[in-house]
Length: 109
Image (cartoon, rainbow, N blue to C red; front, top):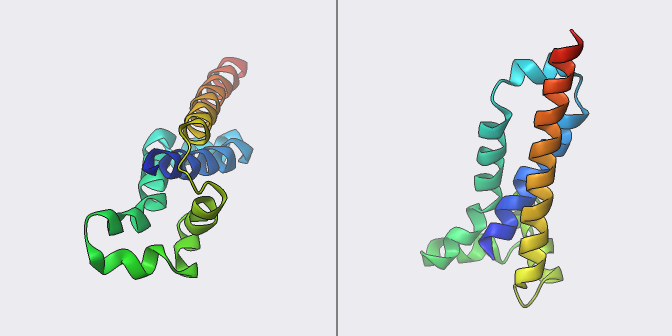
């Protein structure tokens, strides 16, 4: 499911942002926007569902440049709603954690 790829890309980006020091993280600005862009990047190989031009990308090793897209497809052959739901849940938890961490850092200043 494409939503699983979106959530995986956004979650990976949020995790990396969370590991950055707060002063650098603030320079990124709206990390939600960055996470959305990363999620969309992770979904690029799924464009093959709409046009045959991208079918070769989706089925190639190059799809892994999009947040390990091909590996995720091979691990979740049946497009399980549970896997996609878990990834969306992880994304939400990371977003809340990052937001709470930023609030706490601002309060400590």
